[in-house]
Amino acid sequence: MLGTNYVLVGEMTENGTVIVQGALTVYVTEYEISLRKHVDGMYCGKTLLVQPFNPKMFWGAADEHGYQINMQGNRLGSYTNGPLGHPGDGEYENYDVLKGSISGKYRKEGLDIEIAVNTSRGREVCYIAKEESDDKLQPLTVTVKFLVPKKKLKEFLGFNDNNGKYFMDQFDAIA
Image (cartoon, helix red, strand yellow):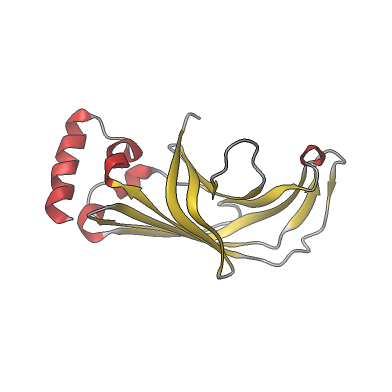
């Protein structure tokens, strides 16, 4: 599924501790969103993937009242850390997302989005050795907050020139 990468300013916390503050890589498709610390080159670190997610959920009444959805299930995405150690080993810590909340509110600078999730117990995986541990890592609460700036709103929300102009006129009236 085709998606779009954005580098946006935000914050990621794990069990209340800030683990990223500043640039986030935000990858969005019509079905999911992936968030992690922005780095140039090869990536190592923590990534949150949440599905379902669609930027169009922030259309309509969200412009005046904000938007929030709460979800729970057996796998609404994943939270991963890795690769750990030598990148070629394929060692990761994996958690399933069990509960999630997605909210957004407009302000004059753009759209503030917050995604908060609770995970299952985590497991250690080594893909090259085809090994997986029992669920031995403690569950986590992960929260990501970021701003989609006004200049990127039309693209992020998937507006064309016609409906984008109408939306931006409404945005300017309420922000």
